[in-house]
Amino acid sequence: MIARRTVLAMLAATGLIGAGRPAPMLMVMTFNVRLPLASDGANDWPHRRALFVATVAAADPDLFGTQELFQRQGDDIVRALPRYRWFGRDRRGGHGDEHMGLFYRPDRLTLLAQGDFWLSDTPEVPGSISWGHPYPRMVTWGRFRTRDGRRFVALDTHFPYRAEDDAAREKAATLIAARLPAIAGDDPVVLTGDFNTIPETRTHAILTATLSDAWQSTAAREGPAMTFHNFTGTPDRRIDWILTRGFRVSHVETVTRHDGALYPSDHFPVVARLRFDR
Image (cartoon, rainbow, N blue to C red; front, side, top):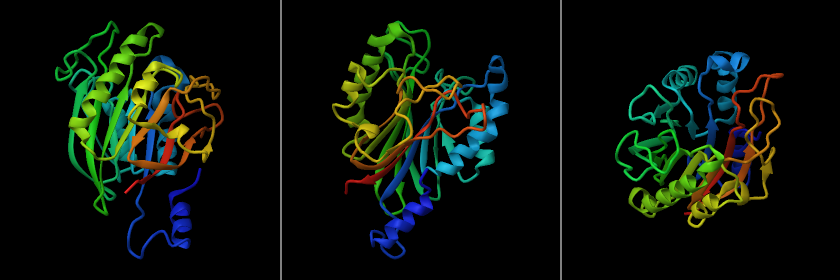
């Protein structure tokens, strides 16, 4: 993984960073945390918590979107990495279930506004379910300003997972695309998530009609394309995406960090280095 300080040193050497001016760069990560589940045994959260934290710390993102996050996991992360803050309600509208938590560095980004909506026929109703899948699905979003005054909107989501949920995933993608103008206007956008489907689907096509897939947007890629590995270390599908608008993708990496047979999650995180178009 290319460390942030290495990137900044390279940019400074080429004169792309003015004296005292931060680079117009944004480091973004998507990371399905995997909920805390005692039946995971050696892969339960207490055993992999330190490795998860170390993985985030090494990537040093300005912002990262999570899926399957429980309150205590979020609190563990910011306790270990106090330079981060996080926000978001859980998928039922409280704090006792899975969150699509957005984490950010307040020393690098200012949170201007935040909100959420549900992937259903009644998106303003917390916990609402439509389209035949069994669990509430939602989006958490935040509007941010960088230190040099650039604004952007970040959204984070987790789509239905079953094979028979293709239609629900397509409707979820359509709803997100329809709500983007009201949430983001013309500002740059980053959408992170576990989309529970592969890129060769209509769900991906709906979203990439207006957004760009970071993995597909640059030849500067590291790590495997696939992201879900079920704690085996051998991934078999690319379901974790970073989608953008108003950015150029300088580099993207699927991070495969592990400690022997221990992995920070059953998904590999994806990290993208983005540059504002303007």
